[in-house]
Image 1: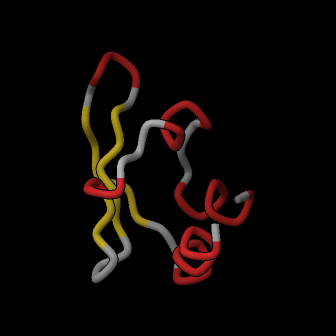
Image 2: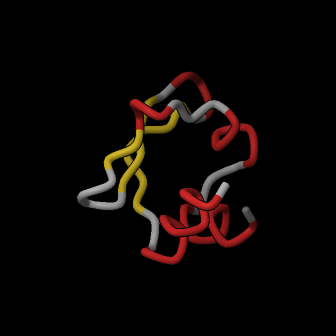
Length: 55
């Protein structure tokens, strides 16, 4: 989990709110709801992807 948090560069609360529909496995990205309910696209590494799948 720490690998994913590090690779995605988000706050823990933002990662907690990620739904499976928010993940794009092809380009290793996710849509997160940041501060002020602002949506943004973030990218994660292949290592982060493997960690997320393992969870």
